Image (tube, rainbow, N blue to C red; front, side, top):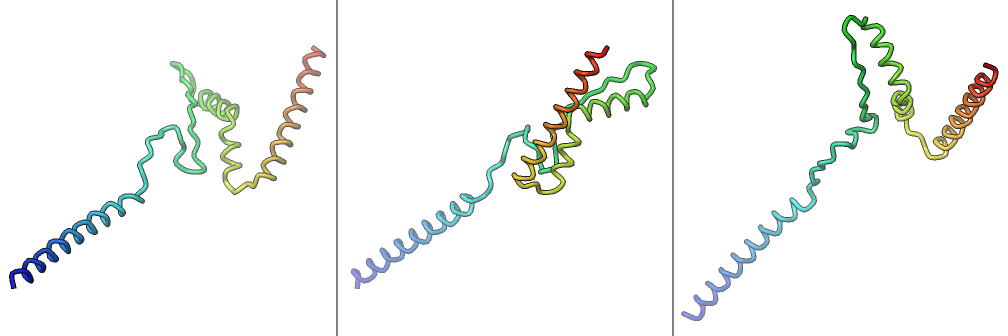
Length: 121
């Protein structure tokens, strides 16, 4: 009788330890696949968001229209708007290469025209 109660209490302890171990493993596995927080602040939040750092200082007595014109010029020079336009839709790598070649050709064309203009003057 004592041997039977001793073995049943041992079985109860073992089952308690097994249940406890199972609960700890279940808790650990739920946090194992949770996404880790990203502390990168330089990366854009979405596919269409860009980190724009354009500043235009407005002078005393300067009309807001001229400051706005300067701001638009800076935005155009930085190329952010073109990049956003290209990110509006998915662009596969083949289309991207074609676009880049076309842009390079246009750039070369405008550089040639500017050089000719400078030679005439």
